[in-house]
Length: 144
Image (cartoon, rainbow, N blue to C red; front, side, top):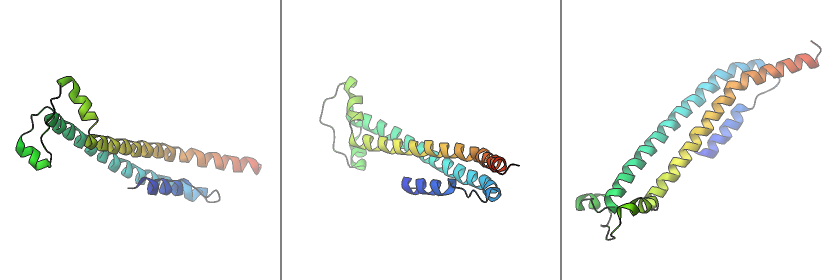
């Protein structure tokens, strides 16, 4: 799901009609379920990207240490690394590799999605309290 679409959907779903608090209260379980499903899906995507990053880091380590076979290089479409890199500098090269940087950006974006959805679920969990407070305020202002 695209982030802006998600933000718009959450904004729309979290608004509630103050004149229909009973109906809004009944929508809470469905909203909770909807965002719990999205949260689970996005968390699984995060795990997949993290696994992809681990595999890519291993491949880059093999590449930069000169331990990757010619067959693997051809398979990945990489040329052999002609640099002589000290063991202590390999991590520096891996961290600066464009493929790893792209994967790290994907991990960061996916983590943000997961964190955002986790917070949305907390807000939805507190929605009943907000509705209750609104009802209490209505009763108070009407002298009941």
